[in-house]
Length: 300
Image 1 (cartoon, one colour):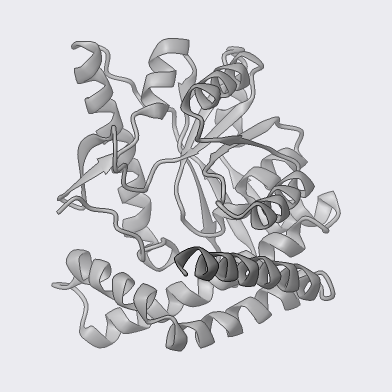
Image 2: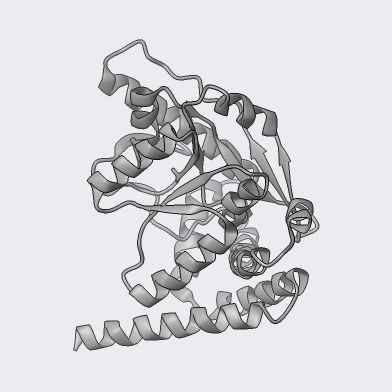
């Protein structure tokens, strides 16, 4: 019975994604964004689990600074932005190169070029912030070779559709599992002087490093730091932020992470994982309604 229910959910997900792609491709980018925003406002009322989780996590961080009404408005904005981003992602792939550049302005591009000049590749630590879905596609427009480490969806039809979208946006996917293959592919990406993008803002349920996020115990991936220490590749934080007009975006390329290498390997990994976590926290703090608050980020 459970397997049948899962197959049905997977089927509905596949159909829903197919429908989304068909609808969005029938309109232009601006209309797709507006349509996503409307759907997000509707989803706020019909997806109680994510609404409750987002409100609970926001309250943990901002409960002493925001009123309950303000927190509720923040959650509504989160839903609107999430669906807006999904619709924009589909529409973005069909835009001509110049329109893609106009849609996403890059600040700090020279830092990326300087890091790539070493020939060791770049490890881009990012987060589920703003429209992170088109970060890789924007870099690809300017000729950068980009690889994103992702978790494969369990349903093959859904994964195939997502992979098709990634290919359309011009970047390559490296699956987290199997672990050995993921590490080999990531090392090859850096050897080829690519930009390897890792999203470092989610809880690691196994093998994670203990950190604090907004002063609360959390767990973060050691992968970006371990790869950097073993290859010499620069860790370069990058974040997408939605501009005030609601339609365009800014891709911020931050200064390279100053790696601490004074202690043991374990101590160095722990110290530097906290460093990149702090950078992510600084962006989430500045743009709280653009981050995904609905997942289980903390360990306590």
